[in-house]
Image 1 (cartoon, rainbow, N blue to C red):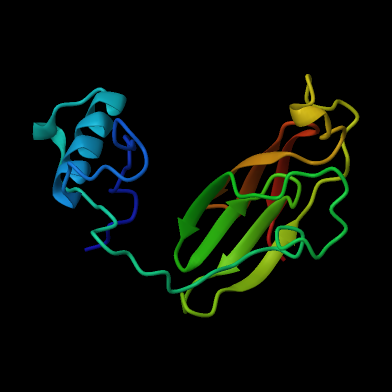
Image 2 (cartoon, rainbow, N blue to C red; image 1 turned 90 degrees about the vertical axis):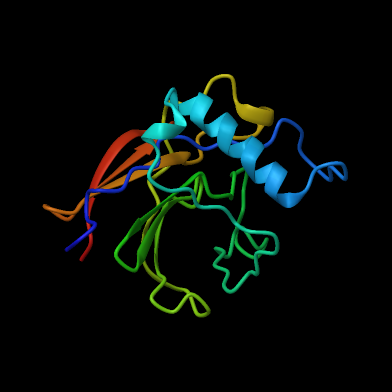
Length: 168
């Protein structure tokens, strides 16, 4: 039996207050976040089949960052952070604002490897008003979706529009 196309995340939320909340246990914090996620999704807890949380002490086992997000590339006036991540098999498709679309092989989560990327050219229709007054015409890829049947990758850039890509 495959779980392909049978899992949906329809609500995500955090606690009412962010930061250290000494009067609440980790379990209470998880319960409050779950309750908020149910409200966000507009469903009742009876409609939920499972709940996944980071637990009390999540441990980082891997990291991937672009050269620009490390401050090592020619940054210009870009915005170098991840907006969305989409997992397809062992690949993670990332919309990385000014660093475009990044595809990372996560088959070994302790050794993440970039296997593909696409950075759109500068747009002629910059985001208005420019965020922080610095984005000008830099790419702003903020969404990525993969059609597993066709292999096509759809990337939306706030400055230059929709890009339809194929891995080669």
